[in-house]
Amino acid sequence: MHTTEYFNDMMTRDVMNDPHTYYHHLRAHDPVYWNEKWGGWVLTRYNDIVKVLRDPAGWSSQRIKYLSEEMRPGDEIKFKPIFDVLANWFIFKDQPDHTRIRRLLNPVLTPIALEKYEPRIRQIVHSVIDRIEAGKKYDMVKEFSYLIPLTVILNMLGIPEADKDRDDIKYWSEQIGLLFFIRADEPRRREIACEGIISFVNYLKPLVDERRQNPKDDLISMLTKAQADGILNEDEVIATVVLLVFGGHETTTNLINNGTLAFIQNPDQWELLKKDPSLAGSAVEELLRYDTSVKATVRWAKYDQEVGGKVIKKDQRLLLALTAANRDPEIFPNPDKLDITRNPNPHVAFAHGIHVCVGGPLARLEAGETFRIMAERMPLATLEANMLEYQPAIVSRALNEFPVSWATCPVAHNV
Image (tube, rainbow, N blue to C red):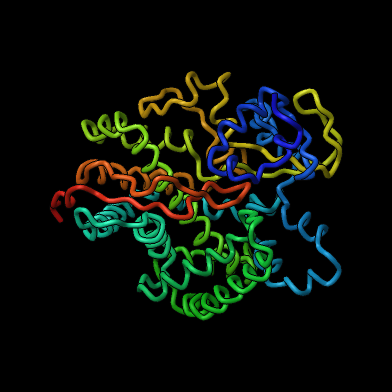
């Protein structure tokens, strides 16, 4: 029998390292649970979570509005750069502003629209794999996974891919992530996030100004044209670029890391992929379900309403535990088993409804190409640690370090 203290503390080391067991216990105990320590409801059933995600009229995504209400006097001025940028992220807006901005991005991030980037994505994956030496230990977090999605999104936006630019942008993104992913172990997370946003915005402004004067075939030019057409304002252009860079690589980085670890722990599934690399697409869907990069998302009640037999009061918040939904045994047979041939696989790793992740098709493409090419060119990685630790965050599922090695060099490929 687990205690109230166990269910209320989502930040313990055990829960960080194994959220799946915690959420299984919580779902069995109370699937719509009032968490006193977090100050909101935690939902763990698939159907309850999908119900909320499908109802933007009843549930708000305006995280910055509620964040500002939680601030102490003077904090809004102190952290103004955070509010100036994050308040213009369309993922934190309700309709109609959410739809107005998202409508610009949807057409350029469909699977068909992304086909033109496939050769460049494959080239980037091969270039990262080409660096691998047999027997050498690598930290996949810092030396492998992030290089693929970050280089891809910079290419799509038209931001220089030089190592200096890429390393600076990665550093600023990590600073912003301290706030976005609710890092409870960093008392200065708002100050650090503010520093990252200021640095990133100062870097972007001249680049955006130049693209406004000399447009190219890239996403920044598309956004500046939308400003010229009166669809976006200047702050929204900058904010959307920051969001695309941040959201365009952080979660995919973690997907590649978590997916590689899942294969290490389930070598039979890796062998299945090596025998048939065409399973890469199905494998990515299962990896998204099995150990998703985004463990949860948050909504606020717009009015008193009922979910799962509980009355949620206006302005109370819900933590929608996506990772729990993805292992709900009512939906997924043998939910704790990795099966890269699983079908159907209606996971909610990218959420659901109008706020479904706009970058989902890109993440699927990047991860699919990464795992397909890894399976064609590399043996299964060997874990070079007795224990792994995850970042102490409620929302994200990210390893601190992921030391691995490969027994042999990558197989040569035709350019």
